[in-house]
Length: 63
Image (cartoon, rainbow, N blue to C red):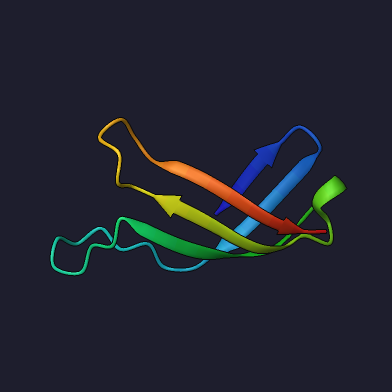
């Protein structure tokens, strides 16, 4: 998955589980790189699906 931000792109990889049997409202994906300001990026993208109002995406970046 790729996210386009003002200063470049951030790429993330990993499985996202939506099945009711194994659903975890908080999931993490690996930040695998990027472009522009984020060309050396690595870290974690935390997805939080616990709110009824939508998901929260939190990037923890090391540049």
